[in-house]
Image 1 (cartoon, helix red, strand yellow):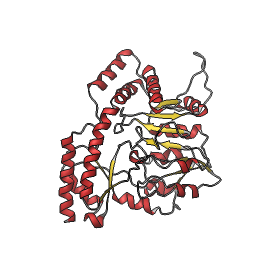
Image 2 (cartoon, rainbow, N blue to C red):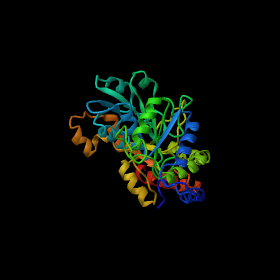
Image 3 (tube, one colour):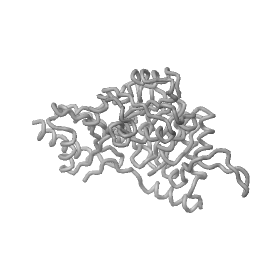
Image 4 (tube, one colour):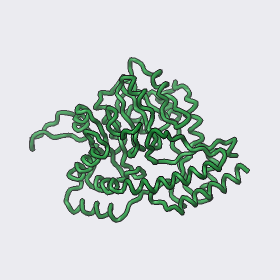
Length: 367
């Protein structure tokens, strides 16, 4: 079975972990600080704070910006549930608005229409690595916290994602472009947000043995062991991107020949992070549903994935928000999106195998 998105790690990451263990520092120390400094330079952001996950990054950013019970946060339903979960964990209410058909990013006009006196922030997602349309979101005059879990290499209108909004949250999860296994980063140019997250990510002791704390913080710091892996991955980013560019080009060429298998739009004004290659399976033109394609590709020993099912249709959110109106664009996309294998760990031959299998399945189903 060809894996969907295996991490591209090697001896360099193994040695970095071993060196960190030999140093005697397993938790937050020099490696985490170095990662923050390196990412700050890479993103052009004044502050970067390393935390335990991309989810923790978003939650701490929301709390640092004062989001809490009674507030509303506008977000997208086409995302991993963590984007909405962090809003719930603050005591606020996520407000889902529909997405654009072209790239499945949040529709800024619908976001504007959803603003109420309770709206405290907007939490958009740069889906698959394609930046969402930020200018009209900024124009609303509300704090914007970017979910950039897919977007560590993205640029919006020529500017690097990471220093543009009130806070930008990245993931270092095992499948991400910089993969440490777990971990996250918050980038911000706001001194108050950075200081708030420093207070919140760890229970900061004041004094010596007779300690005190000023803020009831979380346990959301990043260990040096994981930071060491991320630092090596950061060094490999350009090399890994070149591999993903070849993979995207091979899929683009194949999709152009296969009726009903349509890749998501990539805006030429922006730099796509090439994190996920997602197609929509049009059942009428492709001859079968997305789920039937998944089954037959599995028989061809090709692993695929789905990014994402609409969050508002999941059981937890149907219970939390029983009056949620239908979001037709997102709901249709949830039945059609299919992610194909992408990873620097895959060879060109691996991707050729995926393309050949997709062609065989398409020929069988679409005739």
